[in-house]
Image (tube, rainbow, N blue to C red; front, top):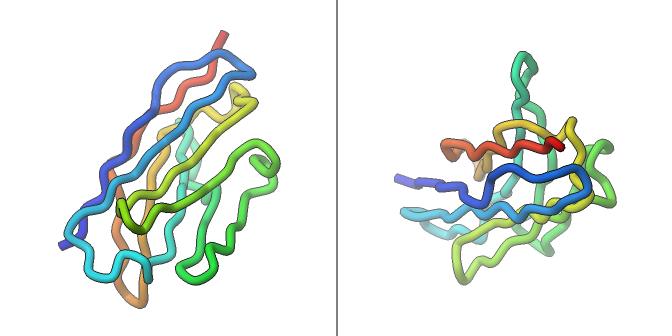
Length: 117
C-alpha cells in the first residue's frame, strides 16, 4: 500500500522561500504516477497548485503560483518536490502531495506553510 510523507513546511516571511518534499514508499512503478501538490487554506476548498506527469515530466501550475513555484520529481528517490519562491501571505495553507495512476490515488498527511511578517 502506497504511503506519502510530506516535509519541509514551516514559517517564512513574505518574499522568502521553502522547499517541500514528498517521499513515497510502498509504490510499484512510482515513475508511472502523476504527482501533484495541493493546498488548503482555512475556510477554503483544497486546490491544485502544481502537477508533473509520469512521462516527459510535463508540468502544470495554477495561475496564482506560475513563475514562483517549481515542481520536480526524482524517480530514483521516489520523491516529488515543490520549490516555492517569492512567497506571499496568501500562500499560507496546508500543502498536500498526491499520487495518481489509473484508479489508484494516494494522499499525504499535509505540511503547514505559513507566510507572515
